[in-house]
Length: 292
Ligand SMILES: NC(=O)c1ccc[n+]([C@@H]2O[C@H](COP(=O)([O-])OP(=O)(O)OC[C@H]3O[C@@H](n4cnc5c(N)ncnc54)[C@H](OP(=O)(O)O)[C@@H]3O)[C@@H](O)[C@H]2O)c1
Image (cartoon, rainbow, N blue to C red; front, side, top):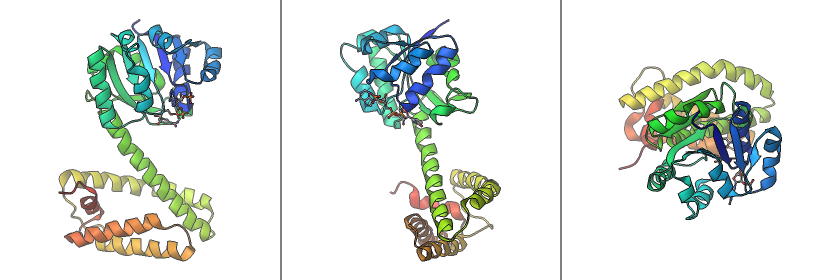
């Protein structure tokens, strides 16, 4: 089988979680980490700890990287004594980064004769290897075809998102923006409820019931942005302005942090000032998009 051996570089919280599914599937696994002791639990499972970075990259044709950032990764891989050892091998870069970093990674790989994919892990370490775990990978289709079976060991929703090396990182960044936006909004809500002596468990129930409304709002917003049509008869920016003002007033009165709601209010006001008072909420996209 092609890629019956795999090397994992980086055994932090996420990097270490990537290894067991490969061991369980019967591949010969080599691991390397700056702090060598983090290899011990994986060696107990059947991995081989490389004596050094040279031994690690020499051990396998498939090298999976999960480090703190691209600067760390580049400092290791772009060394003159390392690049000749990589020729013809496949590197899958799963370190979180932006689109430009992925593009530069692919350019470097082409220069030194490495097959390269760039990806993003869209779940927590405990979910890796499970059926729901979502990972995105992009880059040369032929490279993906050559290691698809192995990469799918990492999660049931391992998804190839196209031949542009930057695609996985760009989608990752957008999904993380949604993740942070929603989670901070949840904390804003929870703080207001706590100040008003409402049980957070009641919020959990209400939020579950409200999910379909949020999802349909996301769907309509994406369609409106795609079609550049913000018109509609559901709820105008004027109505949203009144709603957000009311929330802001309530947060201020309860004495909680209210910067997020202040921002919401400013976005809605700026949208109205651009002449969209009668349009729907997606019109606020005009405030966000690139100026000029
Ligand atoms: N944790 C998550 O839930 C999660 C989810 C999705 C994506 N990710 C991504 O996965 C990547 C790793 O995250 P993590 O949670 O595993 O982080 P972590 O636990 O902080 O591990 C960082 C890794 O980078 C290594 N490292 C840092 N600086 C180094 C240096 N100068 N030279 C060599 N190695 C160095 C660390 O080695 P030492 O052990 O020696 O410090 C360790 O292996 C990140 O890009 C992160 O965004 C994480």
